[in-house]
Image 1 (cartoon, rainbow, N blue to C red):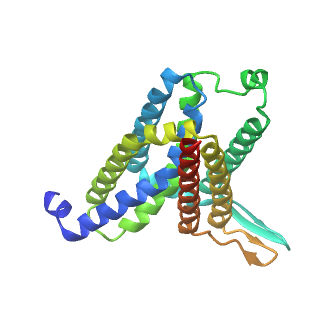
Image 2 (spheres, rainbow, N blue to C red):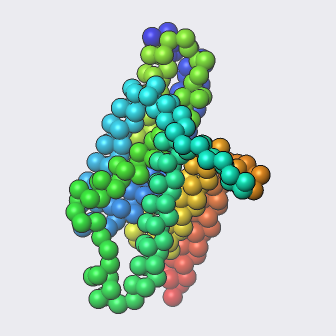
Image 3 (tube, rainbow, N blue to C red):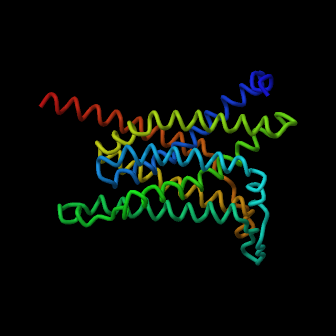
Length: 264
């Protein structure tokens, strides 16, 4: 086991998997920040850390039962008509439901913030019913992100070792490292988002983009063909480039506003 983990191929795979989990974790951090931000101040940090720790446990459990997870790709309902055809499976249903939930969450949150012109409206704004409600939301949406990232990780590690236990340990180590990194920066990211309303709107816009990505990925996983055109998968790199570019522009905008306020 130790010889395998210290081999060049294993170390390179570990670095790649860890980087992949951190990048894919951006979606999770955004959602956790928005869900935790609806709680009282003294519960936000606790909700963020607990949400990520429970996400770690959830991902490790999914990795242990990864052989069953791959069976989610088996179709259970096939539809073929003159204009649409698809092979529905459990994975596509989970991705589609998660995409719709994020679309609903992002849209309603943006509407609330745009309409929040009075203190009375702010008091009536929707909030999670409880601390447990926020954690439950985080776990449900993390399940969607976890299935997607774990199946990607399994595809990357295929053929790395003839021993399945070796690759399982490698993936678990990558998940643990990525969650530690996310816990380190998640609260700082949440605080920045809470301080700047424009960052909140930007984060919600990203959630809507991610929702659209999940819906199209669900269609791709189910091999959907609409009017003789196969639904292709949108490369995640495009989305993350858009997020990075938008964040860069917003950070410059925030700094310019600070300089102007100092001069005034």
